[in-house]
Image (tube, rainbow, N blue to C red; front, side, top):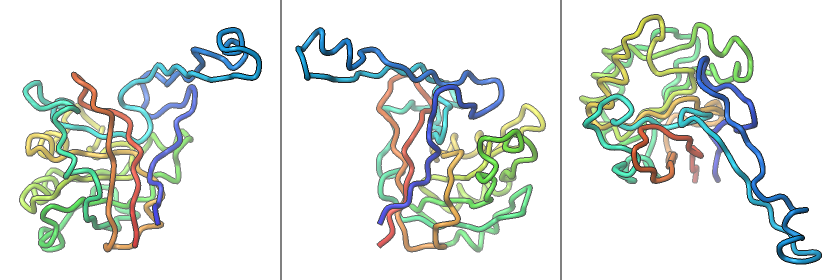
Length: 215
């Protein structure tokens, strides 16, 4: 069974304040296709103008570091059918992870549930979002995790300009997946996590279809 962990992308939606909204439209309409292919033969070809940080998306090292790899260098074994755990931090603002709870997480996806995704599509989503501390990022690196995901606006605090969690995780080549949803449907472990982006040269972030696979 698959559990969809991604938000729906719609024309004009806002993922993050200040970033451009996606424009979802049509390059070739069904009506125009009839003129090209003949009566009753219709195709639709869409056209999307999209910021790479739209909906549920992944960050790879190039997002933070000029010498880091872009999406073309993302190892699939970090984000495709990865054994995963979901850590419940509902109601916690500044999330601390105990190294003891990460002791068996080497090579696993660590998904942080906050339930902030319930505010998606409202102004409240952009306010007082839960985030990880720098100490938690260091603990995740020490544990050797494959990737880290969270159902919040940002894995870092946005009170200032510093982004220590992005800095620590991406320097260690640990991808970050933000704006997840439906984490309340996950169990603590016993599932696989997938969040694969297109293979785009020169991009450090992009939208993903994230999902969990449960036996």
